[in-house]
Every structure is written in C-alpha cells, then in structure tokens.
Amino acid sequence: MTRFKKQFLAGPYLLWIIGFIVIPMLLIVYYAFFSNGSFTLNNVMAITDTVNLKAIILSLKVGITSTLLCLLLSYPLALILRNINIKSQNFIVFLFMLPMWMNFMLRILAWKLLLSKNGIFNSFLVQLNLPKINILNTPQAIIFGMVYDYLPFMLLPIYNSMANIKKDYIEAAQDLGASQIRILFQIILPLTISGIISGVVMVFVPTLTSFAIAELLGGGKVLLIGNVIEHDFIQGMRWDIGSGLSFVLMLFVLVSMILSNAFSNDSKEQKGGNVIL
Amino acid sequence: MIKKVFSNLYLIIMFLFLYLPLFVLMILSFNNSKSRVVWGGFTFKWYHRCFNSETIMSAFFTTIQITLLAAVISTILGTLAAIGISAMKSKSRAIYLGATNIPLLNADIVTGISMMLLFVKFTNLSFVTVLIAHITFNIPYVILNVLPKIRSANKYTYEAALDLGATPLFAFYKVTWPEIRSGVISGFLMAVTMSLDDFSITYFTKGPGVNTLSTMLYTELRKGIKPELYALSTMLFFTVFILLLLLNFRDSKKARRQ
Image (cartoon, rainbow over the protein chains, first blue to last red):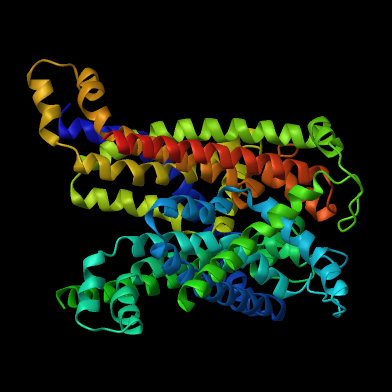
C-alpha cells in the first residue's frame, strides 16, 4: 500500500470525529448563542446570575483546593516511593495505584459511609469522648471525596517523572557536596515539573467540573457549576442556559490548558539549563 | 534514621487513607447487622442479595457488554486511524491529533452533554448511544498508545515485504503487527479502564432503563446506602486486584525472559 492509500485508513475515524465530536460541540455553541434563530448573549451571560456566579466561584475554590491538596500529599509520597529498595518497590507502587481502578462511585460510597452522622468516623470520636463532627453535606466533605478519588491521578505522572530521573545526577550533586534540600529544589523539582503539570491538569479539570461527587457527598445541598448544568439539562429542560454555562466551562478548561502549556514550555528551557549543570 | 521512620510513617498514613474506607466496606459486607458500627455476626446474606438483585446484575452485564464492545471497536478504529495518521503530512496530522485531543482534554460533562444534544436531535437515547459515546472517548487512548509504536517501527521492512511480493495484508500481519502489537494491547486495556470507570458521559447519553454500574450506583446512592453494595464493592475490588496482579506479573515475567 502506498503512503497515499494508507491515509485512507484514517477515513472512518475522520467521519467519527466530524459526527461525534465536531458536530456535538457546534450544537453546544449553537444552543448557547442562538435562541429561536437569532443571536443572543443572554445564555452565556447567565453565568453572572447570583446562583450561577456563586456556583462557579465555589467550584473554582473546591477545584483549586483539591488539586493543591492532591499535589501536597502525593509529591512526598512519590519521593518516598522512588527511594524504596528495588525488590518490593513495584508491588508497593502498584498498591498505591490500585484504587484508581476501583469504580469511582464505590469509592464515594466508602467515604459517605465513613463520614455519615452515625458512621465509623463519628463513633470513633465518641469513643474518645470527642465531639461529633457533621462534615457530610458541606464543601469540606466534597473536597475530602475529591482528594480521595483523584489522588492516584496526581501520583502517577509525578512518580513517573521522578522514576525517569537518572541516579547519576543526584549522585553527582551529592559528590559535589549539595545538601538534601538543595538536591530536592535544584534537581528533583525542576525535573518533575512536567509530571506536576500533567497531574495538576488531570486533577483540576475533573474537580472543577464534576457534579456526581458534589451531589452524593453534598447531599444536593452544595451546588457546584457541574450541578447547575446538570439540573438545567436533566430536570429543568433549560437547554439554552445549560449550553451557555457549558460554553463558559469550556473556556475555563481551555484557559487552564493554555496556562499549563505555557508553564511546561518554560520548564523545558529550564530543564535544559539544569541538565548541563 | 529519623528520616526513614518519618517516611515509613507517611507511607502507612497514606496507605490507610486510601485503603481504610475500602476495608470498612469489606468488613461491613460480612456484617449480619444493618448498622454501620455494630458487629452482628458473620453472614453471606448480602452476597446472596447482591446476586439476586435484578438492578445490580443487569447493570453489571450492561457494563461488561458496553466495555467490551466499545473497547474492541475503538481499538480497531483507533489502530487504523493511527496507521493512517502516521502516513500523513505534518499539516493534516496536526489537525487529526488536535481533534483527537478534544475529548481527552474537555470536561466529561461537556462531552456528555454535547453528544446528548446530537442524539436527542436525530434519534432516541438508548444502549447504542452509550456505546457510541464510549467508543468516541476511547479512540484517543488507542491512538496515543499505537502511534508511538508505528513511529519507532522500521518503515522499510514493510516496503521490502511488498517488493518481495507480499500482499499488503500479509505484509501487515507479518511485519507491522508484531511491532505495534504491544501498543494496541495497552490501548485496548486503557479503553477498558476508561469505559469501566466512566460516569458523566454515560449519565447524559443513556436511555431510560439502560444502566451501567456507575449510573446504577449513582441512582442507588442518592436514595441511601444498601448493604448489598458493600458485597458488590468487595467482589469488584478483588476482581480488579487479581486481574491487575496477573497483568503485571505477566509483564515482569516477559521482561525477565528478554
């Protein structure tokens, strides 16, 4: 088969892209900007309504907090996992990645159980004569659930980028008298920036946009932007407003992608500088 | 020394954070009492009820059907697409790869809604629409796993096979396939993982009465927590554990042989 003919093998995929990716996206844009055939900005501007504005601000807060917590928890974990002796290393890393393959609804179920009013957590506190906490149905519970759910998605790329660092660099730095802290900040951290960024994107986008975790751990009382959109489509039949808000959400995702790309380009240059030493 | 103690302590704390909730589910799945804190004796009755529950079992079988069908179809389409894309000039390749990135990077909820708008316009939501949606978000994972294998493969051996009189299909089977097989398999496995775990996109594209495990659990958990679900979760955990252990074991055995 010639090169020219080979390209036709991508033909079915091209039809698939147009039919199930491009046209659906255009439909969202159409519903967002046209009502009854005439152009309008009302649906997109619906984001400035008090309820919607509150929801998007809360979503950003929850998303950023969860992402930072995931990063703070998994970076030291990845460092430790990297330094375990070789024999058991693979199995231990495997154990930390395993929950990722558990259905995510079941992981939420586990948390709901722990945090509920008469759940394990509270009966433990009562045993210790401490006051009960009522965390379920608050944004904190949602952040707990999100950190629990998405931690492996942060850990995996960071661990991978750390495992790729050559031992020689670190040994060279040690030989030249660098302290542990200096090695961490001047060698390991710059070389893992790309892992951090892909971890941040993999956690931030779902935590910003998820509605299931908020619905289940927030008991329907906490509204994130994902919940507002879900209500618009499933219960309210307000497709125009829902599409407008989805469009805004797409812009948020796009901006975070552009930001992360800018960062990873910077880090590449920095990486070059550091490797030469 | 102190550093070692601290790092081990941290490992243990993180391990408990990840696994304690799952262990609690496991213990409760054998608890005769419905209470979440009182031990009422050992029982298998939740497992019985789980297997006898129409809702759980039909969701389970729907999940298996959708996952396998979507993974197989997306692996075929994705592998063909990867071969086609690798033969393209850089400009059209960039367009294809850009489009491939859309479902990967976009928020699940937006992808799900956009497809729902399309399906509602032209047909009814059903099993098939969920299948189409799953294939759509699976294909990019296949392409991204296969493409690097094609790039690192030797271009000239395939052409040499053709020059020596092999038919394109035979040359593909004998020359190209062995080089890309590992990428196709890992793409397939990723597609399976993504399909099993998806909730948002299924939620928006499913027809009435069609439920995967994720959407069934969502509906059930909104109503409350049934102990049958503890049994389901325990069984799924051990299935995943054993499958992944086997897969990893197979990989390391192969690596040792090489």
